[in-house]
Image (cartoon, rainbow, N blue to C red; front, top):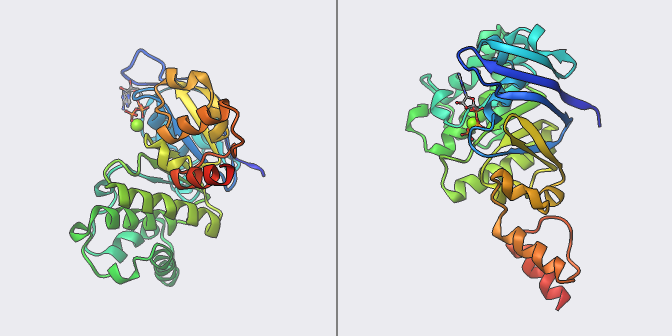
Length: 280
Ligand SMILES: Nc1ncnc2c1ncn2[C@@H]1O[C@H](COP(=O)(O)OP(=O)(O)OP(=O)(O)O)[C@@H](O)[C@H]1O
Ligand SMILES: [Mg+2]
């Protein structure tokens, strides 16, 4: 599959910071891939995401070296309103992304800003609500909704822009475990049904390893590990980078080291139990 995002030798430091936050960073993301970006707090994950969606260098000033291209456009030479149609960003807190009087007006907001014709807006908003299962919320006031519903409204606003790539920065951190796993299942379904590519920063690896095709681990402004979830999580260095390997994955790995024939895919607790039963 073609590369959708190419980050090449990217270095960045914020205006008032003496430290380089990103250092000669290289990363590619393929079309229709779900990439999980992991790394300890402060290593530069959100800074990298901002560099992919164009907030850096268009909104945050600083010193910038290297190149980022998204769907063939060089981010630093492309206007934000053009980038907004290629890359959508879902903030950690949906409160920062919803503000209007009704759910449907909120979802339409980005399209109105772009001057998309009204009938086209109507259609895209309806399609996005249908896709996310929130059509019945159309007339509701966003601030009356649950956290999980707010997140879907914010995501519908992003989807309505028909981006090729959606970036999620810690999307489950404000959600309870059930709503969090529903969101993860939704991302998986959206990728399958729409072919949208996802880059997700998330500390809850147990949720994301199930749907991620790849994990890239960041440390001090660079990508230090990059590979399939099972390859990255079984790498001895991973814990040194502050990554919490899910307990179930550790168990699976230690059973394999003991000589048990197990799938090399990362298994959920239920799947592991099934494999063990078959192997018994
Ligand atoms: N607007 C800014 N101006 C100056 N420094 C910043 C700015 N935003 C972030 N930084 C600094 O850049 C470094 C990386 O921050 P960033 O938010 O990218 O980390 P992160 O990996 O997303 O962390 P977390 O997991 O806690 O969200 C930190 O030292 C932070 O203080
Ligand atoms: Mg962050």
